[in-house]
Image (cartoon, rainbow, N blue to C red; front, side, top):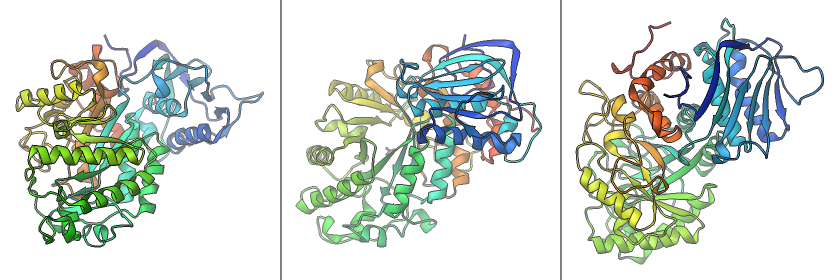
Length: 507
Ligand code: ACM
């Protein structure tokens, strides 16, 4: 039986609860920070920003002192706090007189306030003043994630999403304790990140998009702003520059990157597999080195994703040689390489991560299993993104207006009802670093479109990444998930009202 927390997603690892007694947040409550370091205060500010508009309470942030009002919320960083479960572990104690959140690291405090906000009624999410009472059932929660990598990917190449769109997505991911946002920054249809040493990538290569509907790029200053915004929510940005395929925008910008020295036109269709960097020209590696160097300087996180998927124009030998050289370049700039599963054709370093993406359902599962097995044989760890389960651009069913269906339809149950370790044979828990839900944007033009495809499926993926496997059951999950509909409505999130979920009537 899962713990009796009827509305928290992802379900915490351990909960004991007193179902008959309640804590009530009083109007004079304070948020007490211990110690009042900038990081702890920042987490407290995030909590206050959720609670103040809907409660209408002042909720000042203060250091503990004599005469603190009863009913205060204490946010405490304690190096001797919960040790198991890493930096994101936290405990939350709700008693008659106070709420106490403890973690060893600020990221644990940040994850803990996501649980706390979900324990309040849905109206806590409103940005206007609502009626209380603001009650919590007495409980003790000891929580930590199952997997270290709980990701989402946003394709900003097929259509561009601006800084505010990405911040909005980051905020929504943070509510479900996701900790990685992988940005697919380049593809055939557009190059989206300023590279100072190769300026035509953005001057020219960023102007196109699918159907020429929405091009654009991030300046390095804007990109740093995204990285910092994510970091303040304990989310790591993983930049991807896809290569050697999916490179038409770069090839169109610089003729010298083409084997024949002729730049192709910009591309606005949705075919894949037709482009490749010229892997036998030395300038290609100068280009890759410059791009990786500039990207590494913008990237505080350990990972840089170099794509590697769907290359149809090279022999396996040419492809493997390219990937191995690129892997060395990434290491030279102090980062670890991530690549789509095709990179298992190359000799990989043990620090390289393989993102498994094909199959997951009936289709092509044997081939997908073989690739996952090869990654494990090479000693690399897996990020599990099987398309038939977690590609958020797949249509929910035949009636879905947006999205594609080459990996089948992916309803809420399909996205939830699988496990990253047992999906394929021969994979152990330690082989899997985590799970990630990609969202490709061929058919998505606005952040509203993105939300419609991500929600509710992404909440299920977040639970796969965070919660213990043994009591995950779709029939229980869908009841809990249903209670997030009213929250999303208050937050203005456009979500799909799946018939598999017993949504409450509109309030
Ligand atoms: C992919 O979907 N081409 C990684």
